[in-house]
Amino acid sequence: MKNRIIKSVIAFSLGVILISGGFYFAAFYENGGDGSSEYILDLNEIERLIEKGDYNTANGKIAALQEKLRAEEKRKSGAYAIPVLCGISVLFIVTAFGYIYCSVLRPFEKIKGFAADISAGNFDLPLKYERSNYFGEFTWAFDSMRKEITKARNGEREAIENNKTVIAALSHDIKTPISSIRAYSEALSANMDTSFEKREKYIGVIIKKCDEVAGLTNDLFLHSVSDLDKLKIIPQRIEICGFMENTVKEIGVGRGDVIYKKPDFTAYVNVDKNRLIQLCENIISNGRKYAKTDIDVSAAREDDCVALYFRDYGGGIPDENMPFIFDKFYRGSNCGDEQGSGLGLYIVKYIAEKSGGKVFLRNCGNGLEVKVVIPVIENRSS
Image (cartoon, one colour):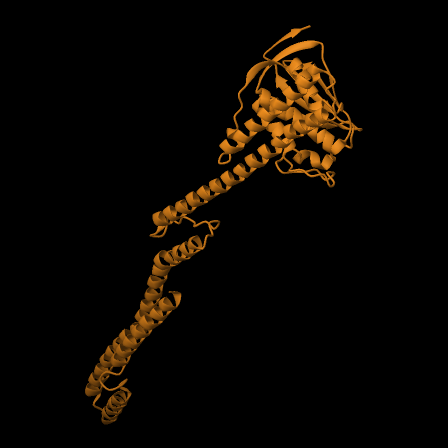
């Protein structure tokens, strides 16, 4: 397009120059060139008249010659104006074509290139809105279309990523109750159920954990096309200290590595029981996997909240990993060869926040302390 514009400008300019040149030469050489020979004859005639002493006739000839020279000067001045007009015309042509190119053709070329980028899937390059050209509104509409397509694609990408996160998170949570089922099954196989009551307790826990697996499987199915924010949380009023005692007993039975220090107060909170069990199991499972030590669990009152403490005696988490430890799929640099998905603490934080609380991590020198804070709805000191 640019080459054609340049060729058109050159062609029009040459046309104007040729036409102007024709007029110039026609005006300059009309009546036989520049008339110099005629002027010489007139001067010779005037000279002879003076020699003869005919001064009156010589003066008349001189006046006529002066008039002829003035006319010739006017004719030549008109001829000299033609190149000036030619230059102005050429300048006008260049300016006109330049304006057409900048205002119409160049914006059109930009839109053409932008359309080619869009068709190639490149949505990152913006198309600037220029009000000065004739395609301003069209340019704005085109760029708005690009933004909407980009927004839709980002939303689709985020939805896919969230779906992967939900599936990975639920798959991670299924492992914990299965581990409990295995532990109780092994206890039954080893004849550790020395009484009818113990046997009934073990079987009851296995059945309960099977129900948890079924519930998580339902969540996995229901939310395989949704994100983590839509994971069902059904809060209910529970007494947190007694609930924690039963939960820790279920998680630690048969292994004896989880010790719960029951506090001397009673407090009620509004949480989802199943999700709170998941939270505890994730924290304790992490401690068993990475610290490989006993785990102390305790509760304490802090203003209008109850704080749950989970303390192991392993190597803790490197300080440089702390800012990222709650990010999904993030694993600390000291995980070694232990298998994991990097979702345990991410799920813990999610459940704590959805319960109206918070979770904190702290290295204690000889271990890691996980603190979960949950608001109290009513309490009673014992």
